[in-house]
Length: 396
Image (cartoon, rainbow, N blue to C red; front, top):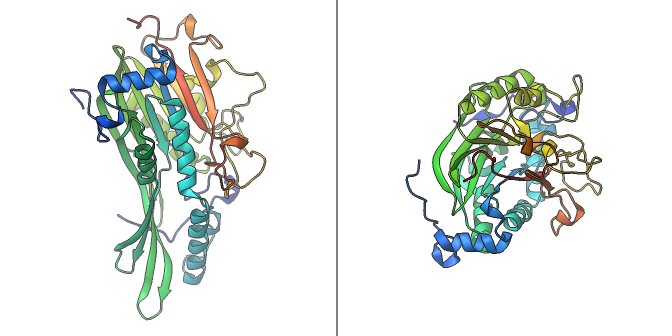
């Protein structure tokens, strides 16, 4: 996750130098074109061929924190008036990002999407890195969104980018010439993104930045959310993806969670939240990874699809976190902070009891075979794939 204050409490500190940079009425057509078989009846036939008709009832979602690719730790606890130290730390961080094989990792995540063809995909930490010259003109970029859109086009997948919500944007110096000042900057922009399959009929879109923020000198840490509302066999389904603030800023996170619940209050049909909530369901009060957010969501009527779906009793469902360089040989996942949560205005039914088969749930990117050809984990988080059966009361 892009945490200017680290997701790991031991690395939490202020980043004081960074500079603040400043509804569809008809089913939409795909920009990839009908020649790829991704519009109308062709899309439906393609999906049916992949799933044997299971789409007739289930609504499928995929959520993934993609991971920025570098360790922000060295940037913390610096004396930010010490320009040489800041330059050195920024260069180490940028080198880490480049060594994280972003194209290879994005390719693996696109492969997970291709293998499942979910109706909607929520992606967090979809970074845009830009190298700027001394006058702040872009000279190079690494754009996670452009990379996944390229994978989608290359693979001929029936997906389109529906929502892009930018959050924190800041920049750090990469190079300095005493005669002219900073000659290279690293600017990064955090984003949450929703992709939709081309046969999914979007009825409404919404997005925004949480009111609760955290200011560190000239930079303000912001978190965003995005929602698509779709018609699924006559039932409104609202999918929200988000990335809440880290545990070290628990009061900010709590305010964001409260606003999130307000944003989805009163929605009719099925509401699904897929994202990184930074609240460890596997921990208890007092643990560094714990916040009350997970319990707050459950108390507000949301159900945890991981808990509802059939699974091994020995499966802890951990989603975070691999090593910062993604090269750890044994999985380091030991927290459950990413979720797919669901709530229906029709209320829970006996058919949604744990293990009923009404829900299916699977983690992705957490097995040795999921590594990139260069040997990296696709992200420091596991992805989440969930299939939600239709509520019996709503089924046509």
